[in-house]
Image (tube, rainbow, N blue to C red):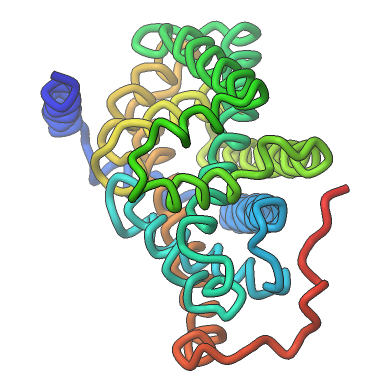
Length: 323
């Protein structure tokens, strides 16, 4: 049923997009302010780099230690490039794979790495959901974006319930209910998600997630200014992009994002559909170009070392410590 609903949404989005003048949108994008575009790209890179630091904290709290921060950031950018190219967050499998190629990753084991990634996703989702909720309450969300606040409320409620259950020891009870053959994997994932029970690490990760979110908002503001659109629409755009990213489908939420973003910007801020489409194209191009360039550079730097499985020339205690 859920898959059918997703297919219907994407089909409707495709039909709607077919009526837009993509050529005019491309022309508007070509005439954008180059300085603002450069600022948007730089801010996007800063935000994703901070997010990579957050992932390093989550890995360390989960027992994946001994990977220097520059190497972890390089792995993060490789994973980001994969996520931009592959649908439904399949690029995250690349993240697990590159960590496994590192000696410290092999020592920790795949399930602990997966658990660290899960903890990272939970903290990021909690901070992002709370931000969307706050922005949805402060900024009127028109038309198809009106339900975003309830999406945020539901997300936060689920995450809080899971967090409370985890703190009360539900993880241990669940592990005992898992078949014996799978208990080792479940135990590894639970240990890897240690950031969820490590208060100093979770606070550090949450602060980094918030900083990354602010950089993302500033990047969207710069893109709007580059196209001559009202910068105050950045909060609404962020909320819509978060919602679109939750729908499995094309890489980066393309299609689903335009279906909601274009009418929302038109209704809330009077942005012409051509400009709104140009903005959506710019959002995708910024993420894709930045991720591919930095991901390729990281792969060129780390690739030979990871293929050989060579140890890092840095002390193992240089993994990021939680504040």
